[in-house]
Image 1: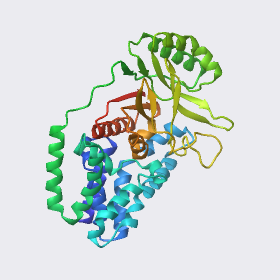
Image 2: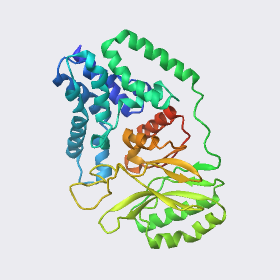
Image 3: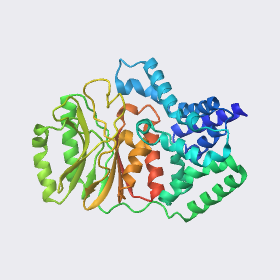
Length: 377
């Protein structure tokens, strides 16, 4: 029975990593299976198996993201470390007293959502909520916290009730709401790394923004890899033209970190409006480098939304789309539109871009939010 449950969790985790929707819908089973184990050790093993299956793509992706010096051993170590850390709440909340599941299981889920674990809190069981209970917002999220405990204490009744509620919620769900009129998200296929490539990309972006009929044009993360005063001067004629036409552009840019080494990953709002939104949770070690100088600052409690054309927008920049913490902290601010911006060129050979898009989609379904996503592939 123990081997069967571990195999089931491995299948769900791996299926979720490929954005296989039935597997994502079953992610809520992980807390129930982990808590139902006969000991703390096997509870940890169950959770570890799930997270290891869900995060295997770290291994092939690390060379692309960290560079040629990062070999398979580095990927393997990061994969094992992340899976171990995410599994740690489950031996902590485990108890032989099944009646305590109603507070212990939600506690285990929440521990992996809140910082510090929340900065690597991918493959959360809460992702099931958008597939099981679309349009129910916080009520559906609360149900997804409660159902695993109910499965432990009364499995037959809980399974029947969950299936019935999920069918009803999906039947009455009207579908994705209409996108804001005149808003457009643009996927790109831009190279970077040389002065010529960056110049050609900037020219293409400006021409695309000017040619668009939309009043808000959203481009992917870091399509302008270095935004300085010189860059702004180069863009100024285009920004002036956009302003005169009443058009706003949202650009992924990297700006120098004032007074410190490193840079800041931003969504720059320019043209008819001016502003910016800063990435709150960059990729640990790859972008946020706590053990060295430089990199992108981590600020998980920074502002969660920004106003664009009088609408409150929740902006999720790349890695943040995989994590419940940036999403939920944004949704508390009651946004009117959800914006995803990503540069997934480094992950083209992995299922990460597909998983990222599916995760953003499940949150938009749960909260019935219009969602636009711009990705550089």
